[in-house]
Image 1 (cartoon, each protein chain N blue to C red):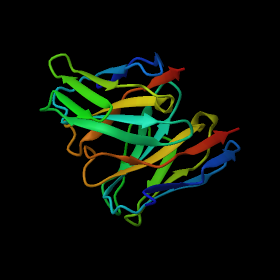
Image 2: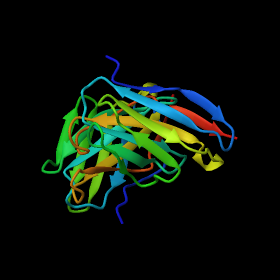
Image 3: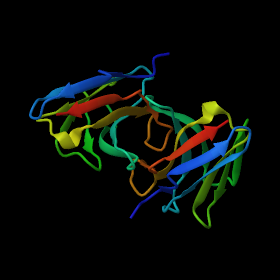
Image 4: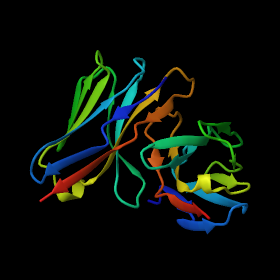
Length: 113
Length: 113
């Protein structure tokens, strides 16, 4: 099957780094995405990485891709209370001609003072 | 910039009633999607459209119908609402392929009693 798996919950102290992990199944995925969902809101695109890259950095966010293990991670440096949200990992499936998105179930990140 | 706008934001229905959820995007995107979000299950694709006048089934299409008469609008209909359709519904759009970043609306919270 085509599953994207994430841990369901992460608690982190303000100022520490957060690392959210994701595993995916389609080795032919072209893009892998991270979305953020705040309470009562839709999904906001945070960042994405192309499959021929190993790492991408964007301000406090660092994405690491391990294609061999089909493992994707999102590191948030200096985590703030505003980072409390649900984070979704998604892969694009290139087996379909139109490139379907497959989302994980989301990781609830709670930032404590 | 409006982006993706969903109406209504909240609705309560009785079992057996019908209703239509409206999604509008102003980004001239070709692709549009309807998802439902349930606790612990991430997002599941209901129906999608690859252009004006086209629709296709996603993972969980039963009990729903869609129409894309205009490029900017994608309507989701519930013919005879059931309690199992209580969920948060998200509309999204992408430029020209599902592998492109998807932009989400803020969701419609629907309760079926």
